[in-house]
Length: 216
Image (cartoon, rainbow, N blue to C red):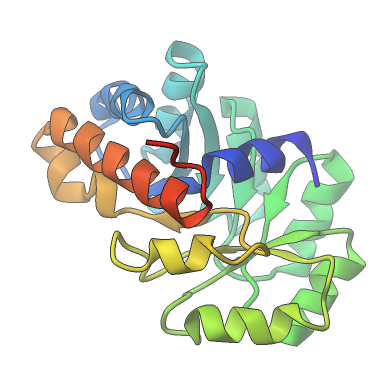
């Protein structure tokens, strides 16, 4: 596992964010950092995603910033140039994954069935995004497919929230969980960064409890 993925594993939570206002990117990153989550996945679902990655990377370097919804090789190039330290895709596209691997970029492709998981492993991938997690079978499905693929790790995303993150993170094959409940579009658009920080702190406590790290 790469150092970047190890760091993500230590954090345990990856906020998955789509931003349509670049002016909110840096305040958001600082709110996440203050809440104990120095990591964010900015998706390419909006045209502003690339610039948001660039601003966070330049102004809040303490936050590990990645690019999500990377569907094409040119998006991968743009994300890396903007400062993204890791790339995430919702599905498994062999062309995109191969391209990123050859470039030495960290990519976590979406895999929700054994065939895609085996194809990803063939390209040297050891961590996959399980998406959409809850809709695709949840933790019970992950445990079932993890049994034969002993070297594979998972980053479930989709339907993860404060109510179920604990059960996911209690399984040792889960690197981290992706989610947006601690930084919803409504909270970002309204500039409610103090609330985002509060929700992040709550999420961190849940993650620590699940992994037996909470000593208080």
